[in-house]
Length: 318
Image (cartoon, rainbow, N blue to C red; front, top):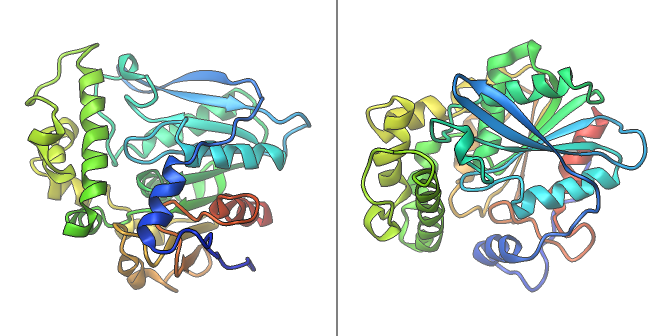
């Protein structure tokens, strides 16, 4: 795979600007109708998948998976969807459990171990007659979940190729990086997003645990200790992180896979990828750019979101 290396926008020097500005910059709109699909994933639990189709007959169907605290409306998801539609893909944007206004559809919280939900979404798209081939792209925690799904499915994976953008394949290492003093802004951001989600869930059903205040909770690890780990059946965050990390499972992936990240990602350290470089070359392609921030990859040219073009070119070659 030959791609032009990422060159950040000249007004965005450094990891923090490369991460924050793209996250705040408005996403483009695309004027294609959205077909919401409610997909049962477990007893008492469903998710919503928002499907859009291009004007011409589609070249295939692309499943997009958001990250922690995100939804089908997350800016990086919408940017990738707009680029994929322009290139002729049908696009299915997933909302994981309790995300994107789906709190009433689930009885459990979203967690990194729910990779089978992606299989249910792909199976539903298949039953609905969505055009093949299927491919998938996951961002941040969604990328880690996608990698775990592909590993669990092996050669039976419905997606014939996948890509993961800035995936925290070692959740504990990523959480420790998030706890660095220089990353307080991200710690506060994600803790606030997660606490808001808990408050929305409590509007539709009871949920054990303390008041969901970011001031009281203080960190993603403490949030996981109080909410995510016990809800998922784990006694502590560390066991949950071990169960949800895709790193030990990467060698079980049997579809062409691109893992795209940045060496200056503030809280997905590039070191977590080092033990896996070259270990499964027939299937795993790593592209670790020197710059880009966390799911940033903001450039001067079009599309602004360089990662969207890069992952789509990888998938289209397969």
